[in-house]
Amino acid sequence: MSTPIITFKDFSFRYQSQQKPTLENITLDIFPGEKILILGASGSGKSTLGNCINGLIPNQYKGEISGTCQIKGKNLQTYSIFELSKTVGSVLQDSDAQFVGLSVGEDIAFALENQNMPRPQMKPLVLQSAERVGVAHQLTTLPYSLSGGQKQRVSVAGILHEDIEVLLLDEPLAALDPHMGQVMIELIDGLNAHEQQTVIIIEHRFEEVLHRHIDRVILMDKGQIVTVMSPDELLASNLLVEYGIREPLYISAIKRMLGGLQQTTGLASLQTIDWQAYHYGGQPDLRTEQVRQQEQAPIIELKGIVFGYEDKPFIQIDELTIHQGERIAILGENGSGKTTLAKLLTGVIRPQQGEIVRQGNPTTIQEIAQTIGYVMQNPNQMLVTANVFDEVALALRLRNVPEAEIQERVAKVLKITGLYTMRNWPISALSYGQKKRLSVAVVLVLEPACLILDEPTAGQDYAHYREMMNFVDRLNREHHITIIFITHDMHLALEYTDRGLVMERGGIIADRAIFDVLDDDVLIERASLKKTSIFEVARQLNQPIDAFVKAFIEQESETYE
Image (cartoon, rainbow, N blue to C red):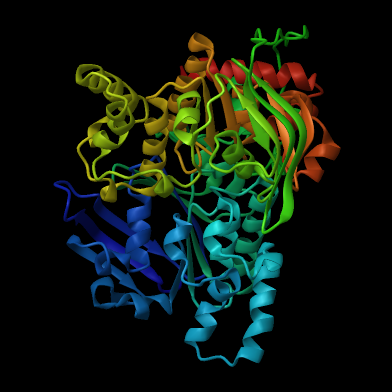
């Protein structure tokens, strides 16, 4: 066996701001050319482990280290970040923290500039990297103006031409549409297979990562390594559910609806499942499910809307009506206009033509916020105080809500979003995923008439995903709050919404029942969406797709209540 390129031995780390270690007794070898997935719930220590591998610990994040960590046989504590970056290339979870250029092209060229490469040689390499990740048409764009998914692609493009041995990617799929997520996994696989880079992926979306082969999965919990297994071994166990990770949907269906696994190998792909070994004994209800009673009062109406950047029309919507109590998913590929539409609905930007009529006819952003709450995709754009509790309480205090009520409402929302134990933490100590949950709590505490959530569960483990989504769903059921999700999670759309709006190049190309949207092959391909694996399970078993998918959703909801 070859010599490990990364070695941890009895390694522990405690941040200066914390009393207990975030990592404890980590012993692990990673070998050249391996493709590793680090999996675990929020707060399990995944990102901290990654920060040790890329040198952010101890160079940027100070703390107490015990045991040893070696990269290429050299002790971690003797590396500078610059020196280690020649071996380890990183794509951070927070893309904004990684940008250094004033344009996409400059950012992608940064590593080449550091090599003093002449400009004529540099330009074709930058274009090649941009084309590989699908941002070649945005080379002159300011990175911070991009959508979340576009930012992820630019971050990856920036390290494609670096001569590195280890590629570390922290939540690389968090903001990507389903099609680009597959492209990204294929790109990462190519770097591993053809350029022999050691690849380490930190990611919640296990099923999406399995689009290509993974050598080993490191499952973490509470700062420790629970196990190191092959994907097949992990899928055959019940460890994923036990530690709060969503199983691939087809595996959940087999375990809970088809009598359990009948094989121990070939589990990591739909294509290698022996479907002849499985039989569905249930009798799905073939009756058309009654759609939730829809309130007829419009809460938002758009008429003849035109909006563009730099005098170029982008959003063009002739007519759109959203009613009180609806549950809506806004779908589409990165850059299709989903977030821009949300900003129009909330008054953050104003249309250049047309009219937006909102319940109560509010005019200022502050008045609109009383009716329509907006959870932004990037939590860093929403958080303004220093302390977790004060951040959630801020809007209530500005509205002169009694302090006793503030204490009660803030505590309730922090418990729902899994942040109550961190209520006195400084926001700077939170991980990106924890900031994401905090940004949701900031808006949820106001209980507005309409709630828009832009990728609310990106980067969240499954336990927090279900807790948060069930809470939002209760707001809809019990208080008739209109819920609008901007999401790339097709199963979220199926489970928690009734109506789908599909966007393409700033326009709405479909407005239908959500199941009809996700069962339309032509629309799926056109909008870069993706059917969930439950559709394929139903097809393989010759079951009515509509009824089988709904039966699975009902069964899954009962399992995790």
